[in-house]
Length: 115
Image (cartoon, rainbow, N blue to C red; front, side, top):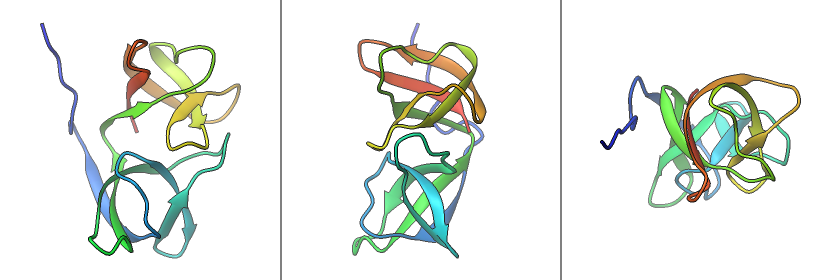
């Protein structure tokens, strides 16, 4: 059976940005502006879409998302502490914010979790 969590409970807002990629995890960097996260930083959401000129983007701030992950170990199912990996995805972290992880695809290196 195939299960999709895409878009469940998702809500988003539009922010100013500087040529971010869809699917990239971001942080608030200035008033009404998001930017990429450095390795180990907390993130506020994921870029869903960008304007043609790349200067605005829609960011998922809540709901279910699927992101790439890096690191030696996959995030654990259930409540797992995650941080940005500095490459647009996530990694497991020793401390910080915990997220409810519902699916881990180790071959595809993706994790689905609630923001």
